[in-house]
Length: 116
Image (cartoon, rainbow, N blue to C red; front, side):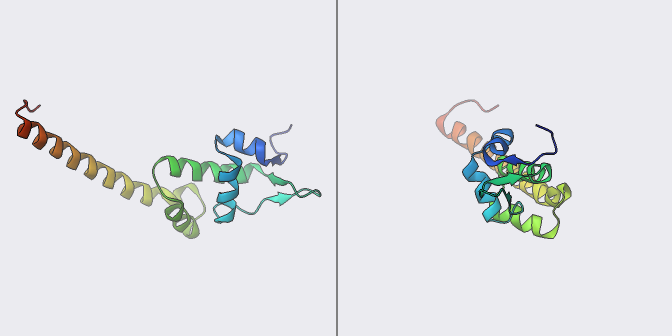
């Protein structure tokens, strides 16, 4: 199969490391374009569709919600569309990590253990 030939939903899902249901959800939410259909009604995805779905998958694995991803992608459908959102998400995670570290120190002191 050529890299430029459309592929079916099962193969697309396998290549992306997600379920076919997740791919259909991405399509339903408008995160990827509606798939072209074969004469018998099967979904067919292009390399561009896979590229965009891969971006969604990576953003999900980074902890962003589908709503956050959709909002960012409405503004700009390129890779750069998520940069600001990812920076903000990272800052929130770093803040949460610091809060957890403070809580751990507090609990250790309270329990009478040595603090790092």
